[in-house]
Amino acid sequence: MQSPVSICVIGSGYVGLVAAACFAEMGHRVLCVDNDEARVKTLREGGVPIYEDHLPALLAKHRGSAVDFTTDLGSAVESSEAIFIAVGTPQGDTGAADLSYVEAVVSEIARHIHNYKVIVEKSTVPVYTNEWISRVLHRHGVDPENFDVVSNPEFLREGTAIIDFLHPDRIVVGAGNERSANLLRRVYEPLVGGSYYQQPGALPGACSASHPAKLLVTSTQSSEIIKHASNAFLALKISFINAVANLAEAVDADIEDIAAGMGLDSRIGPRFLRAGLGYGGSCFPKDVAAFHWVAQQRGVDFELLQEIRKINETQKDVFFNKVLSALWTLRGKRLAALGLAFKGDTDDIRESPAIDIIKRLVEAGATVTAYDPAANERAKEVLPPSKKLHYANDIYEAAKDADAVLILTDWKEFANIDLVRLNDAVRFPIVIDGRNLYKPQQMVERGFTYVSVGRPASYQAAQGKPRSMVM
Ligand code: NAD
Ligand code: UGA
Image (cartoon, rainbow, N blue to C red):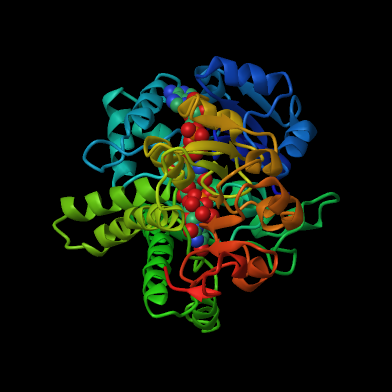
């Protein structure tokens, strides 16, 4: 490695904590700052506040040596060359990103800049945030010679965050001059030069010493737009396939075959073509809205972004109506809800379609027993247990005496259910699958009525219904 960089990461959430652990793994010296004292205490004492594959092992490896946790932003800034801002940028009332956390952090950083620092926007922010950060630093009297602000958007996905970070498709750096771009080149040198992949114990992934990570240096505005446009484009793919799924149902076609057929075109590609309940999570919903706001502010007609959102919202109604069609009425029905997280392999429930659907089912009079392999505890914070909502410790406990089982999150565990045991547990063998984890024929053969997305519903012969019928 060329020379390690002293790094400060502000924010120890899904992005900041992963970035801090990975920078340490790459050989840098990292201080990770959060103003949530309880979180910092947990991290210092060896706890891991989020569910993320490989994260506990990386933190165990580097805690107390290459990475430390603190609430003291000032001294962390003073002792670092690169300061990464990784705080939240939630959706504000107008759809615009709420940048108040970023501004608060920048104001605090300003008081501790006494020599040259590079401030890095890692949070997802609208175009020209870079400019605003510079202005705030100027207003606080920071000498312009003492800082540069660069954009370095993060493209990791929750659930695969560590591998995404260490084996990225690309690293994007938006910088106004070579001095600051060079510091970022030094930060990412182990991945771009490939030395990390030769290191003993390096986590394996798509990159290697012969095919290292690619780094693109561009202007700050282009870099900021790359992030918003990438998320919006991925959301577009999902909404597109969901709209096609609804059409597929209307004409008795099969969305899984359609997606496979489309995805074989290398210009389209197979990824992000999984039809389901619509996208959720802390980013796609807010980033599509924020990108639309940016376009509006600049007088650019980009209504396509509104359509992406509209289709996504409708998709939850489509699923809810499937439950109604399968069960007729909901009052008094017992339902098993498999999944609370917005996707598999994470405990994150932010904007989770599963949470939204469970709320609606309970409001409609159903009693729901929910189970998620990682998100039960987080879900209880927004959906407290009640007479109408229970939490189970496994799939079969959730399914006990259920009138129907709903699959709401694409956990691998839910794709490998013991169907005999499930059939024994339930009152009626009806599975309504919002993630298309099973083949309809397989479910019918196991005695289930099976309703999924973008495919004809399949009825169990014993119920005296046709084997395949469009809902
Ligand atoms: P998060 O809410 O999990 O974490 C943010 C952290 O910042 C929290 O721990 C909070 O306590 C801390 N914080 C807030 N204000 C602070 C302050 N003044 N000083 C110190 N710490 C402070 O958020 P996240 O999911 O990690 O997202 C962070 C940013 O990264 C967002 O802009 C998001 O859009 C972007 N992003 C997220 C993902 C993802 O998968 N979650 C991926 C790429 C980009
Ligand atoms: C997404 C992007 O994939 C990351 O590149 C980006 O860094 C991140 O947002 C961000 O900016 O925060 P993430 O939200 O963690 O990552 O998860 P995804 O795997 O993208 O899934 C998002 C949502 O879309 C989930 O609800 C998922 O179930 C849904 N989805 C995804 C589908 O419905 N179909 C698909 O084919 C893919």
